[in-house]
Length: 149
Image 1 (cartoon, one colour):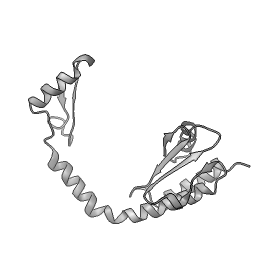
Image 2: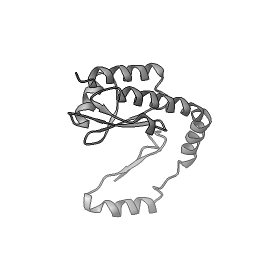
Image 3: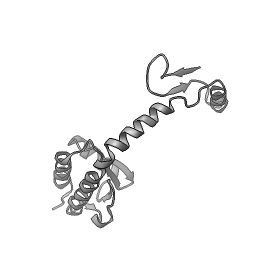
Image 4: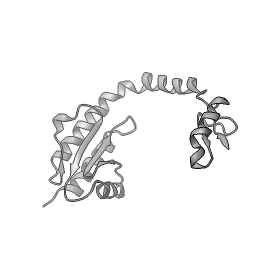
């Protein structure tokens, strides 16, 4: 069975196939033969065009915020990062004394979202929806949670 989310449901893209696991490859092949390939590429291209026109100029702010977060993390005794290595909107750093999953859970409890990137490694990514206030909150929480006596 195949369900298209973009036809009757009105989603911009998407479909799914429901079948036994051992028949998945064949089901995907048949779905594509019957027209289940990418048709909504114009909509996706329009979204990308909008992002480039409206959000590209905001990237420099994201890079600046990432560097500030890296500097705050470098000042925490329970974290390890070299701020000089941060050149984009992504900050990757290590936690000491706990797993990345534990650290992410503690951050999430305080409203700061990051993702585990390794056993003791976290990744923080800035985007246009994270402003200077959000950066300040993240820096504050890092200091509270990861400054060891």
